[in-house]
Image (cartoon, rainbow over all chains, first blue to last red):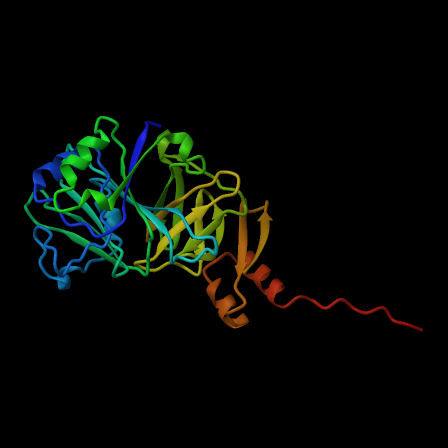
Length: 254
Length: 58
């Protein structure tokens, strides 16, 4: 795994005025997360009202045709509640299809949302998720080592006081418990766990792997490469998995 | 939160049944309705354990 950088934005952020810089960063692999994004006062291109924030959650899966969007809780508070969940929003942009992707977390209002800016037809598409998440810290990660931390801060802090940002320069050894996997929705209440770092190799977790829906443990049943859950997830739910032997932190908005 | 691991080698399946006692037994059973029958049976065994017969004393 390439060295990764993480920035923690500890207070409110606003959209950089230079959207071109944002697009460029995204196209080259930047991962962007804003904390306390306020949709009622900040204007996202193509979206001016919170009433626009509707959409079927499962369209995220459809959107994966063009890109992958993964909300990955890195660490939960000791008591397992979602109150202090730390979330990483990862956007892997596919520069080949012309899409521009933005991702935002509105933590203040407990709202997670992800949006594309415009598709090839010039249509703004926005997906919103109402969740009761209240992260104390949000990581902004850059998966592309070609982008330096300095570059990113320089380009992305327009409107954001640098005093609000704490930067961390981590390598893989700093994240010993994290393994990159993806949960792929394969059917009603079913997901497949794949190791995305090794070409989507199926991962069979230990029998006691802990699946959670919105922070609450649920019963997983493994059969033929898929895990199904009880109670079954519904649109808007976030599924995470942890495994004692291969500790995973990954989530899927179902 | 209680967790119980079971494996059904014949079917090639495993599960870690999560029982949250804050819900009623009926609700817990209902939560597992979409799971294989053997898992549902295990859930019922957990919720309604068979009482061991006491030894008869002469």
